[in-house]
Image (cartoon, rainbow, N blue to C red):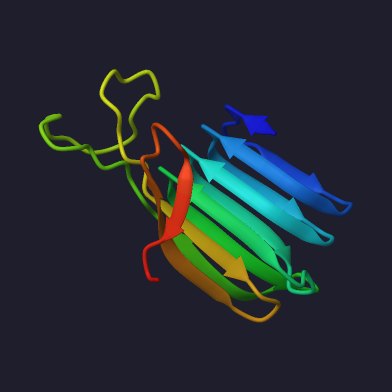
Length: 143
């Protein structure tokens, strides 16, 4: 779990099953071995690099912008994709953009993007939590 990191360079040299980034900015995370699930929430300008040999990597981004995902083989970037999403305010909550504090009295919908690396390519899909403030149930918007 990494929280509040700014302008950090973090490298994992052994297998990791899960990494959570919360409120991190302008940072680079590198995994040099097998990598599992990455959760990125309320972050900006993050670069996450992992080896193409990772058979399946699941990345879930919430309320984050400019998240660069890179698959690397022997120091060479083979594939990359950029994820950028922002909070959406509910009806009647005013206008504005950007990051919202969790302490907001009015519940906000937190859009999410699920990206799966399958060993050769990225597949990104939007997901939505039904009644997120109550149940936390996640459903795929495309199916």
